[in-house]
Amino acid sequence: MCDLLGHDQLVSLEHLKAEDLKNLSANPFEPNSTSNQFGRYGSLFSPDSLNNQFGAGSPFRPDSPNNPFGKGWRIEGGNVTVW
Image (cartoon, rainbow, N blue to C red; front, side):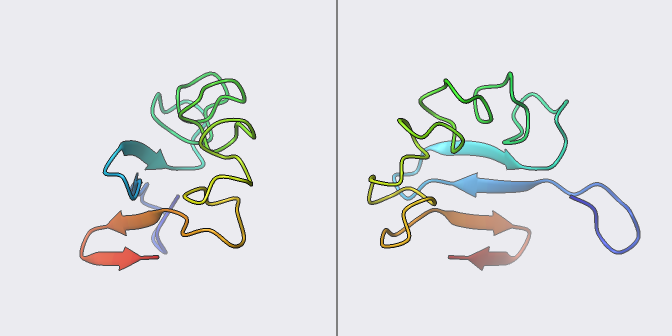
């Protein structure tokens, strides 16, 4: 992610169960990025990835951001918290 001046910004995700889900980022080379298809948090096969429909990203899990009726995850960055 970039701010208005083009500086890279990393926003951390924090799972409601206090698991650290690292960086919500468009950078596919960042090891902990949700956009890194080979990393723990971006892989289709990792249970910790929101991209895994059978893991953390399952549309049937009540705490998944992919469940339209669930609680989802909290996004924190700087002084801002978004639900």
